[in-house]
Length: 340
Ligand code: TXA
Ligand code: MG
Image (cartoon, rainbow, N blue to C red; front, top):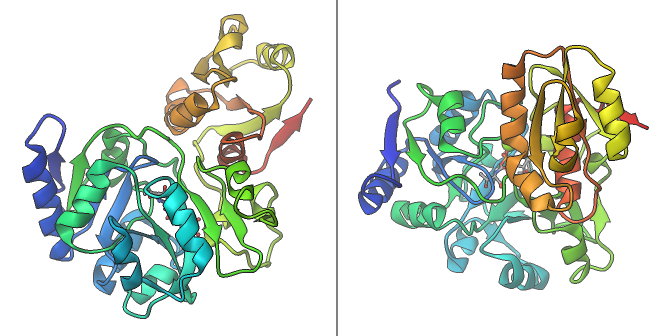
């Protein structure tokens, strides 16, 4: 398949947005920018288009998709029995990197929910994403625009490198500012449950939900055969091909560990980089966790080009957006953790 490039940065933005909307209306699938990661969008009402999304990504059928809306009145076309709390949280966190799992409406394509009676809904803050949704006139289902299992794409080039030839078009927009996928909160359970941490932090959610439950799968390896609330948390994910270890330790300990290994690489903080003698990728300042989140997936994509036998990643602390970074790194490392 020939994948159309739609450049909305150096090309005609309005024309590009219109073109993306047309392809989506016709049942095509299009990679689009959002503030978190690039998404692979399709009409939420078109089961055939959704099927193409699963095939292009090689995504397991039992992993449901998030539906993206541009305006609050669109929510009633995808969800029902919307609780008061959802409205309050939407007022606070939408548009933004925040997804709520609600009771689904039967009008949406069956495959989106992978057999569940719920639907995940998000209103992105990216203007490009909302403009594309408006231009299509449809709620858009959009998983991250990567091949299933690979690190999520935070630039148009990442999306192209995974999906060129497999999708109808890629919108070439700005790099993603946040860099990790949205926070996912289940609201159909009582009390509500955090299924995936993101830039809207657990600390922020506790202000509205004092009895918020943090799903066990966020920080622990799922037990084999057990069902989990968020199927996406089941898999080894975000993983480079290079064998990856996540390391909890001080700067001094990290430098000592990686300098003692031959032909291993490091993904490290900026303040320790000068002391690391081997191959390394700096992913940001340890006191600026937004920068770590922003650079995380690029670092995981770049690491294979270092041709190292393994890579050690220095873990951030888990406060704030640190929980999201730690959660992704755990999966990138297939739960191989070194505590010093
Ligand atoms: O930031 C994001 O959320 C990005 C951008 C493109 O918006 N999208 C994204 O989609 O990360 P995806 O498909 O890579 O991750 C969706 C996550 C998965 O962990 C999935 O299991 C969970 O949301 N999810 C979706 N629908 C669900 C449902 N009905 N119940 C529980 N979990 C659900
Ligand atoms: Mg994903």
